[in-house]
Image (cartoon, rainbow, N blue to C red):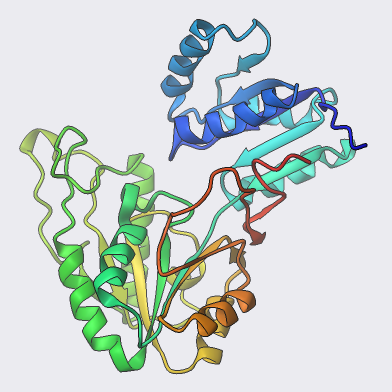
Amino acid sequence: TLFRSPVGIASLISPWNLPLYLLSWKIAPAIAAGNTVIAKPSEMTSVTAWMMCKLLNEAGVPPGVVNIVFGIGPKAGDALVAHPDVPLISFTGSTATAQRIIERSAPYCKKLSLELGGKNPAIIFQDANLEECIPTTVRSSFANQGEICLCTSRVYVQRMIYEEFLKRFVDATKKWKVGLPSDPTASMGALISKEHLEKVRCYVKKAQEEGAQILCGEGVDALEIPSKNQNGYFMLPTIITGLKDSSCCMQEEIFGPLTCVVPFDTEEEVIEKANGVKYGLAATVWSRDVGQVHRVAKRLQSGLVWANCWLIRDLNLPFGGMKASGIGRDRKST
């Protein structure tokens, strides 16, 4: 007979990009398994966690079962990670922060679940259904301003359809409206902060310095925002071509509305390109050839591979990445 026992106190550290979704995602299985929780939300979206506390209280969750600590990572987060009486840490965020968590928790051999960054490829073969592929790839690249760890940031297109795909992809992206959350016609809103906006813009500048082409978006098209919101952290969805595989825009997680499109010739070539980064979180393969989809998916160094779709999944399944995209799995029972 298999018995499962709670570990005790679970330290849950969640990011700013999907604050309620990712925090509740961690809390629910932790308390269902009999643990108590000390959660630290991002200091940039702490009000969401405070509002959730009120709902938990109304729902009758006993005092002391779910505890929220507010503060910045280097202080509040570090205190949780390094505390000897906290045996389990679940963290969603950057790979750099995860490295610090591993170092600080190592003396106590804590149980870790680290869901980290990604540099996710979409691989589009010549027989792909472009009627479905193009709008889905626009959404996978720019949903939530590209501030989702699962967003596509590298688009590899087989050369026979490259020009057609690129034209239609750019045209569809230009229809992606940037606006206020209160605008029902808006496709995406503002980035999280001024500092993050500048970081994403910096990648566009670096691409230009490397000789890349900016086909739409930042620095190319006019951003139409109401005058009272002109100082907001808005950025147009941006498509870049002409980059080398070694470019920082192709290697580093940008976490914004920017994607790079690259042609390829053969299956072997694109697998090598897709795997040629330190991350391995998610990927998408577009082809009508079922055998090819399975063959490519098996060789991709990725925790999750979608076939002819994006962000369709069963939330009961364990979730996580490979390589620098994480250790362990969220929502896993052991």
